[in-house]
Image (cartoon, rainbow over all chains, first blue to last red; front, side, top):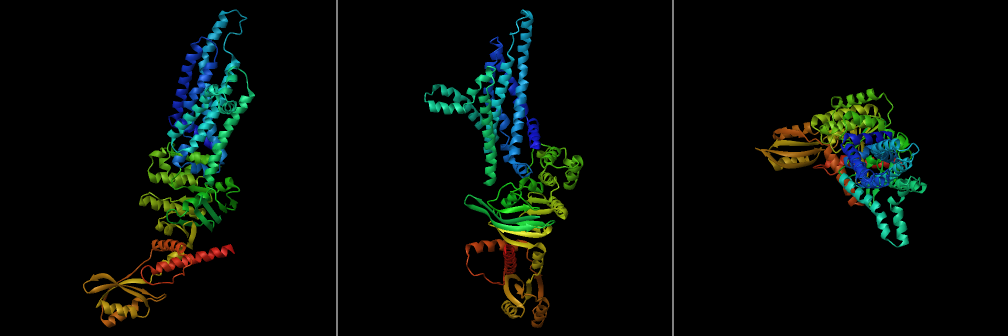
Length: 248
Length: 352
């Protein structure tokens, strides 16, 4: 598993995909940061983080599109599957590599907060010494980071499953974008549906609705559990796809 | 070393491998033959644990591949039909990855250098795999299969697409590997099998139709009893004489003509060397013998016959087996039939 993890991580930087991903991720998050928090002249990061999730729709397929589709096309999966590695090990190796890239880029994007804290320090110095409430809320930022990473983890699992279904990287990417978009948009559609049962089901699928409480700096265990189970369902399905293929 | 018992693989309603059983001893090089779609690759994929079987069991060095896949896979090196190469890696990176993937525990640098030496890829170690020629790619694939020093090595058409020199090199390599490894080699190049393998297993339509030592087949082939003879003389009379002569069981005039010499094909009875007595008979009759050529048989002919026959057997099940008929390709048919009969008997004995 470790060998596959390392190989996968390395392959992001052998090909341009890794650089493109990190570059676009940082550029987009910086842009969003400018147009939300900075432009509104506040310390509030709620809209920054919820906007960030929309960039995942395009960016996460970049990470996941080649995970399995390329192996299938080059027939290298034969090497992985005949090596002394379990299917679960192989899937987790790949998943964790994509997750590492994602978490790394999210952490890198934290440089956006530097101006925020710089301004806060300055304001605090100018204001009276008892004005400790000036500045960004650490709880809000850390909570949102955790939330964003959980959403991303689930999205990566979705993208990974889709990449097992096709040999074509482009098809895998396009399909992933479509499905991730659907998962996000469903939350908005819900506002227009009056039937309770349908709302309940859509609410379960909709990823965005659970994210809100992280933005208030509240740690929501139900949401944590939701994202973790969503992620495991898709990882499990990926493993099943491979098991199924073996039993052909 | 390898034991396959009643292996079956169904794809939906299609039966790709139908009750195959055979075993391979340690140090044996077995050639695995069959026409396209016979189930060779499917069998190999099951052997290596890439596919699972519908029924039956496979054990590698005593370890069942379904019960303990990780341990069994450690004992196998596999080169699939298309070598599983990551084009964006250099040869060295790739072999390092294979080393880690297969959980090897040797002195890494030294071991990889050794493998490169054996497969003759030391010169290209720093190059990107996608820039290598096909022959080198194939060798990198072989290096990958050898890296965990497995007791069992499985090659699926290892020489396909190589130039003649490379083919010979790879064959030599395989023969050397056969000294301390068990090798299964699938191919449809028959000279390759003859040159490299100790044993030949032929499968057709998912069944083992022949399983014989290469030397036995070669010996059968060497006992050619068929000749093309060129004799000057009246064609009809010569042919009549040839047909009547004791020791000749079949004679046929061929359409070839050279002045007043005609060509005939004759076949002698088993255990008779017809050449001398034929010469004296002709001398007596004053018909000069101006050419005599032993007609060799090739593994190709036997292979084709075995495959044809196994096809026939399926379509005409229940029809009485035809005996030996001399003439064109009669002997190949006979040898093919003998081999198939032996195989069937051995299988029956194994079952009992």
